Image (tube, rainbow, N blue to C red; front, side):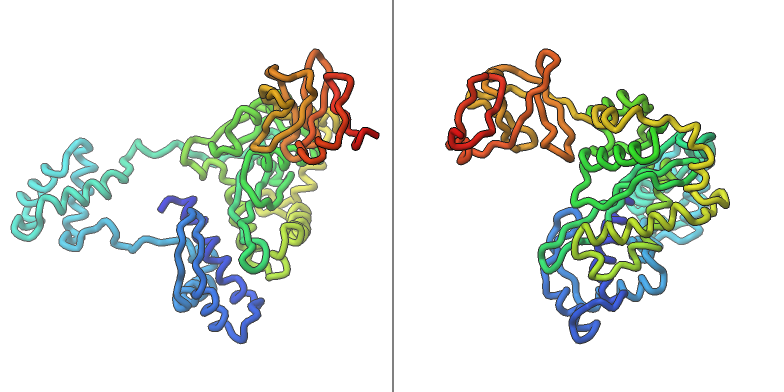
Length: 417
């Protein structure tokens, strides 16, 4: 189980036991609540269907009360990968041989262990040593092989922003619940949370909205540091950063620790905010975000252990050095997505599986479309430096709408009036 999946599963488990932790269950007792949950078929974060016993849920609750959220993260058994036929002495010798002779293979290790009387040939087979070497030695890091990682901090406020996604709780009531995804942008120097919000999906459009809100509220960063997930690595984000004048940097693949500050912030959010939620807070995304906004405001105006100052104060002290956007309209223009589509014979085109009406004059043409993904009412065609709006297709209403005399206009009047 990789780290991301382990974190998703831990949040899933927490979501199940949270009503018991916070005392918000409506059943007569905690045990009755667990029996109700155990009777349902549950969908895991990877889409797998499963169910858990009430005793398993109770076990998770005890783990959480004893060790917090981290205790819910799957832990492999301590001796996993260590065959029980291999003594600790044999295991130590295997690692020592690998350190001394980096290119030595499993067969040679096996023969050396027998030669040195560390193991007996009739008690330990060659395949046992081979399995151990394959599973354990492959993960061993030798001197000189460590990743060159050093603690770092940006020299200036807004020199570097970090962004990432946190898998949050389930939101809704009854069976109509959906996973919440928290998307966060944080300033590396001040630790200021520039923008952070829960959404029902983790996609490019939601990150762009958070990024745009951060720029509008605080200013333009010099660099943006993100991972390689689909919301953060796409042509649209690269183009947006180019128009803003922001250098887009991607962390090494499978190296979440590289974005240490936003990862650490998300851990704090789990421990200090998510663990305090009750059922009322998660009935809707509006309720969840309302509660979260208060927490963010408190975080930004409280002393941070990293520098002993309030993040908001650190930002305000250097605000005159931060590049401010030219205008709100300029920011909106920078964040416009640009795509090409061919207009069909019925004067329609499709964006993200949604059909839109286009002016009839563009039938058969490949056109450039600009839009804000979080506000599709902004979608329009750009042709010869002029803009032509699109609208969502309503076939029934189209049957009542008169045709425009101009091939480049959509007549919104109805019934010929």
